[in-house]
Length: 460
Image 1: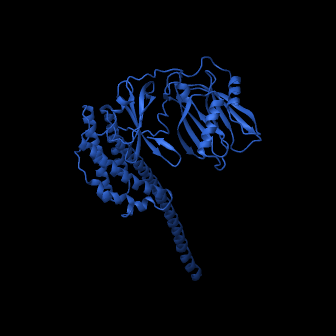
Image 2: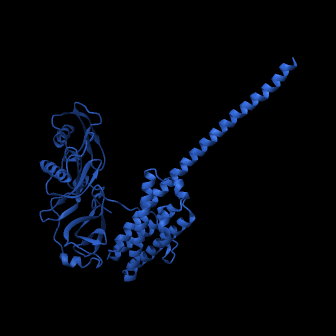
């Protein structure tokens, strides 16, 4: 009897102990899960801040490069205000990173100096005062240093993307690329300015003025409306068919917006997984606004030159003439080409822009977009300049090298305004720029920098 009681005395504490272990394990698992969730949230926060830092440092680099060739105080004011804000944003994103204080403090100080110096130059430009030669040299030095910093940040970004570095390693490392540049980035000393600008994002274009859109009525569409059946016939004639395949119609509906379009859906027969052809036909005038073929793409078999030839032929067969290929980029095995309208006088009209996508496996046109073209196109525009190319050329920075002879173009200045300008291509160091001088007033209207990528040419 005493033995049974003794056993019970041991069983109850044992069960309680086991229960405690289970509860302790459950608590530990929950703690571990909580820590893991917290670590994931922090990692995502750090990664976002880092990518924003890289993006804004690139913006500072581009703006500094443009400041080296600007000659118009009106343009300089806008440029330096943007630079002022861009450097400040980069500095704030840097403060979010778990980077050692010795590194972040020096880089933060440098970005602050860029921001402050830009603010002082913005006020100088607002007063109509040009840059001095000493200020230009300072900007050139800042550009060189920011370019080096941007290169180091890109190297870290690549390491994070391929998994060879984590944000926690970045926090503890004192040998990575971010620190390499830091000691040299605090040499300059500019006056501090306390007030900062509001957000002013940098826009990256896939061709000069390619995102020029307006809310006004489209100028290029013919009068009158078309029926759903007429839209269906237009879409059927427009697409580039795959040889040996029939196409059947699916849903057709009207999408409303600034330019209402009939959305026509087609599918090839026999059916292939992932393949649809969608065409947007404008209700006014019955013109194709966009088209996309979602078929799977094969390996690259044709060259860029061959793809350009296919795109040119495609446009010609559809009555879209007097268009010149301007800039291009390869994305996901498709060559995307920007075309601009060319007047009989040889003037390029950048607002009248459309895009063609050619599949590099067989040369089929699988994408088309002409919103800007039908929004802005008219048969004739004033193209007689008041200035000669030689007079316009005198407005360019003397620091530019290998400057082109200049050509007449029409560029948008606001969503509903455009100007006749001379387009000059010039070089400063390894950077290539497009500078636009008003052909009537000689004002410097815009500066774009050409950037060559693995896929083609971009302008920033």
